Image 1: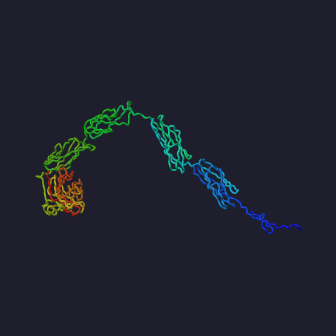
Image 2: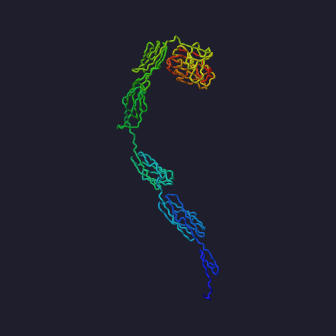
Image 3: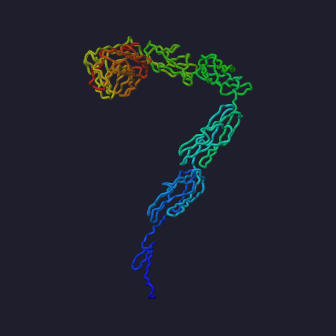
Length: 630
């Protein structure tokens, strides 16, 4: 140690971070007495690279880069790139980021006008003397072509004649994809002269657009033409075959001759004959599609419809022709013969008359089709001429009691057989008249009446109070009408007249007064004809002709009409003759009639029907007359 030297002071150095500390003589100094801290800058990027993927035509996409200030002071960072498909940076090209904080740059990529392929570039982010690179890539795939649009129709066909005016046809394109689609039409077909609305159009997803093509046939000869149009869009091309068939317009042939067939047909009255007219030109070539005017020289013998169908109307001949324009066919003679008789029906089938009375029979002839044949004469025959004779017109005369079988004959055809019954003639018409002077239940008037309850058993009786006859039915609904017939023997021609008593009329209940003709009552059997009148006059009225067939509730409705209605004091009448004709009158006015020959004998009578016993004496007859005169 040198005693003359200044003693060295101990020096201590500590390095703390960026600060160097020195101690001397127990004192702290920092490069001249002050220890100052040096602040620093640093930043990090996430993600370090940015990748975009899309398909051609896709809408814009965005991607983000986050910058974090990892230093100890605020930093102003700046974004920069030279990538032309990055079209927007938000929130801008620079931003200030505090220590420990982050900021984000959002980049927008546009794929417009870019083809499928790979693209790349580098962006820089700078701040605080630090620059960092961010690689950015884009992979652009071709647009998917599967089912992106459809075409209807898949082919387009034009047909026309030479010289025709222009025609149009349409092709509809439907966008079946998920993005808007621009489609373009193209063709090299010279006879397609216009496309509307134009050669291209943009179609939204799920919608359609139409190309309307105009075809021109000017300067084209007859023949077949074809070509192909293309419709393209979204990387897809579809072909549309287009055809044209062009024909010549042929002028119609001139009719020179009309031939009519068959040449000489013959039919019967009520039959038909089809004629066929064939038109030919001068060379003998048939001409089709023509209409003809048909004519019969004798329309009363044979008529013609517009199709040449002739109908035989009467015996004779008719000349048939067909005309088209000024040309008339050869004439054809149609012969119409009388119809052949197949059947003869005789009516009435089973009449009854008295000796010295007459019965007119009617014979109706029909052909095989059932069509009546008029204008015929018949030969009439009676199996027993001593009982009934016949004149040439079918009028039978009763000569003696008995039966005779009547037939009519035409040629070899004989009618069905009708049975005529001839009964003994009455010395004079039988007449029975009563005003019901007694009170009786059942009505008898000294055994003049046969009752439905006492004799028929299944029906009910007629009773009387002085001046009135009415029913005893209880309204059970079992068709047990109150009925009574006159006793004795009566001829087939019968007339019954009665005066109606009707008070307290109601449409709620059914209340009828009845006249009976050709009626018989025995135990459990009532058969004949009932003519009933409902006792109302308010629109619910009716009158019916009913055939009773024997057992209770076994009947047949023959005829019904509303009629004028019934009021108290009206006169009702019913008649039947030997032909089975039943006629019904109210106040001597005919209201309806019917013919039925099921029952040819029996007696006149009267009846009553009600659906409630309470209406009993409210209706009935105050007088009654029956006769069997001719």
